[in-house]
Length: 400
Image (cartoon, rainbow, N blue to C red; front, top):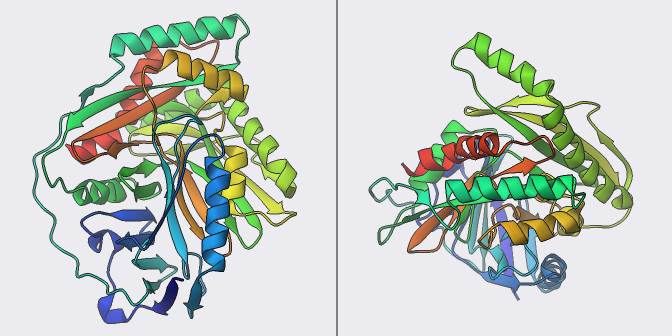
């Protein structure tokens, strides 16, 4: 039986979360707040088509057998597990939930410390210096990606799908004892409104919230439709306006919003989505974005909802099964946890999960980064390739 104790962190021990990261970082941070973990007290594993429901059931059992003392009572206090889930049903990559030995959280000006079985908070260590990494094409070349995009366009024209999301990869060897913390710090500084995540080697800065559950309230953020930022304010605003009026990007966005709303409806008394998308500005791109909100009508954990939502049309396509078949056919690699759910769950089933985008996977000897885009009937292979270049910028900048 695990014994977890959460207490308010004394003022003298407080500091920015990114400056407290351990050498093997576990983190879920946005706008300076969030949670970070040290060590590993418990690891739950699952694979296959039922991996999310299996993790949800294992989590309920683990919570039932734990002793929890929580004097803070905020989202992210008490017993918490970080999680990272494989994109595909038959991925060779394992899906995990990890309860850290020590957790530090920050929210609304408060900070807390959770320990398992009396574990001690290790003193933060200095970042290790390492050379910049140069990412190069991996399993999918630039030319191969354009060819795959054209095949997807042909499949859509033949009625096999309405939208399919295709990705390509970049890879670099990493030196021994590579320190991921500088990259996470750069991502948190440059993309503060994104969810900066690091779980079991999966890391990045995602602009897309898959689902959040807090006291019966459900929320999500859908992104679909992308354009690069302009070189001056006038050009930048013109690009934003063109994106908002693009029939191709609007169609892609509507597919994504509709699929998410339909997946949430069985769980909620009502679901409300923005009547039209807004333009979300990130340092390197504009996105069409829509926020979705709902109220739960039944007992369901954030993992139950994640299972219903994943994969959304924003990262797979629509119809879902047909899009997944095309991804398996046209992508020459296993996505692993790229575009899968990543986040955390608490003892009460509440939690927050993003989609593992704008990031990569570190396995000890190499790092593999991914970027993708939504293909619809009006897509052009060269434009889709250019969009992946934009989406690689955060991870290239963080590792460079």
